[in-house]
Image (cartoon, rainbow, N blue to C red; front, side, top):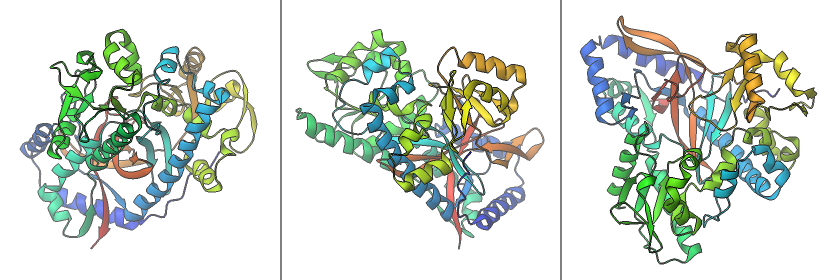
Length: 465
């Protein structure tokens, strides 16, 4: 299996930053009231998931400038390869079949969205350790978190402890809302030029998803930011949208030019019959929707299987191949077949999966929130066998283990201030192939997922003054 990339880190800077921050935290002599006040700020800033605070932790994540540069460069290379893979998938039915697209998915990816990009924005979920950086999956459809992570970083910068910390360290943060809006407007301008419809230069934007999802507060944060930049913005449930007079309209009749789609394709298809107005306006090219439904082609977990398939790897540049072999875990569709590892070894896949449980993960090909995942090194033989049976009944992938960093983070509980070991991920956002900012999630389990019970912290790039 491939070695993970050796990042050129300034480990001492990060270690010093953590030690200094923790010293400041201890010296603060926090009380229950202090912690309650912090949590009130998190909630009042609407950084919540399903009504609960998204951040129970008391320290942000720190990375060095060298780590950030390595993440950026690698993500640019892998994303460039992913763009090429998207073209291959669309041109080669034998490759596309590996994605196991449903009939509904084939239907919604068929219309031309009016612009050339499959994923103008995406997020690579990944792990950054002291000596490695590796991806675990690609969120290519409608990645959550850009407004949450920005709001949390802004909140943290106003805390007294962070102001004291900045006396010794230079801190760089990210306003991920800025490239998000710029991306939406660039896509809209391209769509408007390509379709030649009579649409205003400054679009009315709708953030579209079901309004009972746990991330609904982020839609409001996006709306407020877009409006502060001069763009009329609505938050709309797709069930309330109407397609009338050649325009997609809100329930109040207001015309919508640009949809920032936060509605997952699977959840759209679950209520397809209820959402015909939204669907027909997209199919007819009457509204610009970002990301397009075609992003589903890159969103399947099997996309890493295609990316690590020798037939595809051989079409990429030597730099892209090297980046993939360093950072993308070997992935295959679970089925009775012979296949090869990245080092060229031919294996009988199903017996090999049984024999290598400690180094493997089984994942549904298309799911989120940690649903249906079997983690081999946390499973008994009988649990793993049950997972393998399930994986042969519906599309699943098997993926080589990526070692996740375990870091002690300060938390508050009945005993006051303590440090608990957390699994931590670092998920760079991409906008037109350029990396900017992170979603950073923590969890006491191997699944770093807010839906599965984890939380988020801001990430700051630090250097010594």
